Length: 302
Length: 334
Image 1 (cartoon, rainbow over the protein chains, first blue to last red):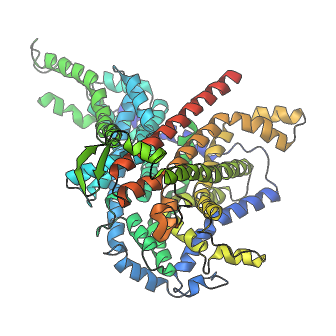
Image 2: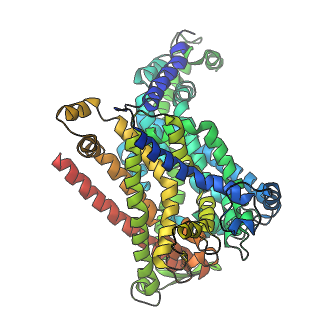
């Protein structure tokens, strides 16, 4: 059992080291009152529309567009949410929330898993054609989503996947960003000696991946997982094309239906916006600090 | 095979190179070394295979298929029948019956891109600079600035559409306080593009600020100390130490934001409500992304939509080329 100890120990050490780096700033000077005021105003501008969504969603269709606009929540929140829950997108926001959770969850699991595997290969293994392949991964980062929309539409229609949730999952099972993100993380965080030690001990690739790579990658997996979940949950163009008019929509498609319909009852629309955003804001409130760390970590190397 | 199952309970610690139980020269050891060779040779390919399979099916194949489709007439309602029309889809866009919409969309994509990218990145740079000071409530400020990132295009745009609504919208009420307005935000070319830019800016400024902040924290302290010794004010330090050190990061965010702006779709689509699919009642904020959607999925001209998509790709390649040139210049000058 002596050789397993460093396996579980190393990743912890590297994780704390990198989180210290991301967490503590090298700020030179103490900020004056002006800086606090400006940042406070910026924070207010960031948060106010969110707060106001709550206010608008708790009013009725008349109060929401009155002048001056309401600034405090009204008493209709429950009523509006109930209406949206039962009626948005044909079968209600409840179904849409479930669909989005299924899609984003599936995409997150596959993207994180496949990204770790490919990222590990690109970071630590030697094989023929590696450079060319990595170049291909990088070049796909620049291909716009619009380019694949028409063929994918035809493809999904021919596969009988029109209006099917699978059509939203298949094209994004793994992303170039995820592979690149994991490669960058693992090439630094995964000591080559550790891999060699495991090899000398006779572990095959499967075992090395399971017992060494995945434990080391865990903090980056959490970050990539959150980024992927947010991105998949918020994806718009492809869902609106393949699921438009569907009775089985995702949250974004249901919201678009509310917004582009004939009647504009803003208190209902904002109630939908609130309900569709709440799960993400919840994730954000719980893991916000990690997401902040993830963005700063991923970006500086991207 | 009993020998291989036993060590698995001990994890990687299990010994396999100790004498095998049956030491026949052509027995399991040959098998094992053969397996080992396959393992080291084949594993890397197995690991990257999922990405390349997905890429081939949903990245490369559509790319080529879109190009092929752009030379055909294809109806939304009969996708399997494609009729060869040569360059018709492209000439329609450049000089033909829909050329007015195309050039209008190209211009709008450019103006909306500038309106939403330039102020956004400048503000992000300033905010990051302030966040880099020692602050009270640092964690709260960072999280608050990033909160808009956690909202979707749909939710954010719908709320802002209410704020910019002509009847009882908050924006007009606010202008009214100063005796200005009311503005019919959706109707005007510049007012509507301004409103859409506000939505984009709101969602992405904090995100970019955090990217800049991370790069700023990597700037060596000594540079600031040396500059301070030379008598540089804080503003001069920002201009002459921070900004040059951030050049690669700034370039990175410019590229990412430009790519995002070129593909702008959800904001104009939802901002327009009923007329969103054509980018406003008078196409006043129709982007290339909207044009592609409108041509393909409203007018049922999938071939023409493919041509628009390929033109967008061309624009992005051009941006990439300019980017490469600038990067080379920057590197040469350093």
